[in-house]
Amino acid sequence: MSKETYEWLNQNVLVGFTSKRGHAWHYKQDQQGTEPNHYVGAVPVEDVQRRLFHWKAVEAPVCVRVPDDRTAVGFRYIPQDDRKAVIRDDNEQTLGIFKDSYTIHQYQEWLLDNVANIIDDSNLQIGSAGLLKGGGVAWVSIEMPENIKTTAGFEFRPHLLACTSHNGTLATTYKRVVTAVVCDNTLAGALGEEGAQFKTRHSKNSDSRIQSIRDAIGVVHEMTDDVIAQIERLSSITVTNAEWDEIVNRLMPVGMEGDVRPQAISRSKNKQEAIRHMYLHDERVAPWNGTGLGVLQAFNTYFHHVSGKDNSRVERNSLNALTGKTDEWDKQVLSVMNQVVLV
Image (cartoon, rainbow, N blue to C red; front, side):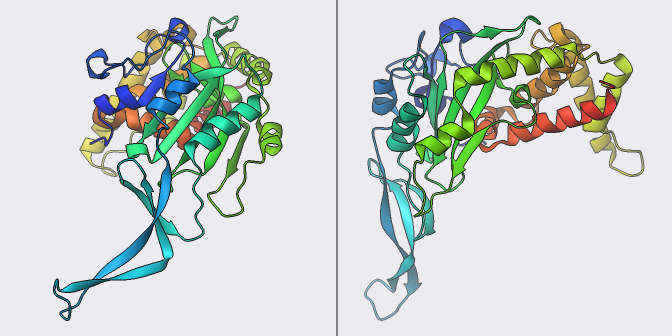
């Protein structure tokens, strides 16, 4: 079961530029509380501060409770001087327990202040921001107001994604990302084999290093031409029906009877049937079938909207984009396609 309810997501994930991208696919109006979380234009910085980053992560001592019959309560606490807890200062929720060397990266400083210094451009604005895991994970996405459309008819939004955590799951990361407008998916494959990013751990030696970050990732408008070129390249690759079948069989193999359980064979066949139908008939994929772009879009859309359990899909998709799992899956699809298709 997802730890993030739809109520949490509709109140703690802010989505901008809906006039260009539409509502997020997990949008539920009746669970948005006292104010909507979708914005026609950019998400105001003030709203991110007020609604998401109005609290700080603070350190707290860690103690271990041990039995002790000599005390009135029957136990005592032993301080753990080499450990510390990180908690929210507004509700005292524990977000993680770490070694003493762990350094907190406050969301306001690392996701808003640093990003403002990195982009140094008033034309780039907040496209989305959110909290997951009770505030243990956060991100801010910086985007251009307008969608980009290729000659293949594929619309996308390039952006700078900044994310970090207070629960130990993420290093502070700044990376270039592409969102496909037709399906609201993160499409790492549109960045080619190497998408620029910068990471820094939560250590005592970590610092913002703004110039290093800027040099590592470039800025959003500089990536637009690269993404267009990659999408056009993928759309120009012809994929025959036989090649498509081979790609599906490699990425979603069906085991041999006698080697695996019948239930596993049935599940694999169902997966193949679902993605084959999507490739031919789903409006998010079908316009580009028969091309390399259609192959990437089919598996990416399946990964986002079909694979796994629905009750954890929103949280899972968000975390996959932040942690890079989506990137790895897209790279695997491109690798197999390049092996099968004679380009």
